[in-house]
Image (cartoon, rainbow, N blue to C red):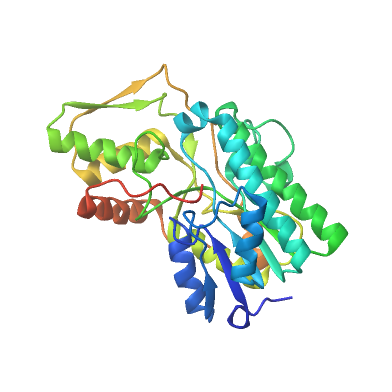
Length: 321
């Protein structure tokens, strides 16, 4: 059954963040008139009493849970306990309170990091439990995957209309460009841009460059979440991506060309590659709620580099992974 967003009060956690900002804009274009965005300075979503207060203030019919503590390989490796606790606690309290209050729909945004390390490509949703995630981001991935179990359990026992989405690696304007916490594309854009500005002869990138990733432009991800909030009502998780993979080495060459960095690229083999390959089967999203990504990687990289070059400073840490 479709959810009439124009008649619902919608709470978007992480709504002022990287994905949340375009999502709120897209929800408005789809008729939503009443959107509540809790800010982290006002609501600590890891605390149950604060989550109750947020629900008192928001009075939501629909909750879209985007807020997360995320980062690249280095940040995950350095903060496994914190990444597990924060992401688990937020989802746990938010979904439980949604059940108690009879929320009409709960949209849990998960992560591609939940998939097993050696998942056959393309990743199909049925493979989600066939192994352990890549070690460097396993605590984050498992915390998020536990929320899938919670969503399915609450649907089965309490009738909560909870759905679960699995976005692939995201990038785009407004991303987090902090080299200590960012994901691969923003980190490489910043490295290339700063190296060009300084006149460096080389940049050093992590790993071998042979690992592959699928990259989804942030506006496309926001569109997918909005469509699912409107049209999807099943317990099965849904991949959200573009269905194409790129080697990190090739992506870096495209970024260097877009930035105008002409120095050489060295690969630090002492650093991890992370998961060997990532590419999704995205057929379920198209079948169930009509989503198909519109922005190719070359076009998306061009727009992201242009945004970064115009702003030339790190954005605030983003609220979704």
